[in-house]
Length: 329
Image (cartoon, rainbow, N blue to C red; front, side, top):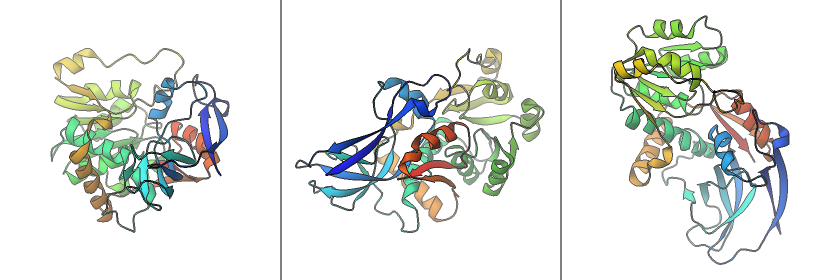
């Protein structure tokens, strides 16, 4: 008999999430049918998108999310016992799958890399950085890149890939500790947006000529300040808008239209699920190799214990994490 613990959405969020929005439930899983596997969560991801995506859930539904899991019992020859997979199984300790949607780690995965990286730098956040910067922004050597939430799971990889491609990189983060981390990663300029006297001035000082590419994780007033400083034909990859997710009042107005028009700026929102198949696999291998070779560094913010899921999620929304926020089951 296997008991699965799952965190459910007890009540839809109004403003910032609280403990009362979540409920921990335990269910007994049935025996496996032919073609099925029993999975045990090893590491679970919490990500900003969950705050928005939860609107599609019904109250009482399991919270969504990706996890690294191990097959502990198998009646599916494609996934023998011991196989490690990445899958969108949600906030649950155990689950049964028929194999659909389970992704094995790349066969070349080095022993020295922690499995949790498949939820971070060599997973969805890393792929988001990779495709957002290289495909949406189409960044080229010698250009200047601005990234906010730069010490987070996505932003920290954006900056490092941009440096690998020969760019000047400016990053904004919300604490002095995070700014110091960005400097260690090789960002050319990093600043604490919470303590600068003027964001507009800080951006102009960092790059007086403006910005070719802006990778936006924050939205709101931050973006309204960056966009007038874009160069002509600048490109903006809109990845997230975490500054807006928990607002209960009016949202920020958009950027000055004249800046977008006269600077002929291109803005494009994107979801990483757009890229599948061979291009996705190549990107994963690139990220894995860059990490193995020390060309991309990573930092994981890991909480131990499945019961920490809501607290880790809420802490991530407050910006408590340096790097990728993960729960070790």
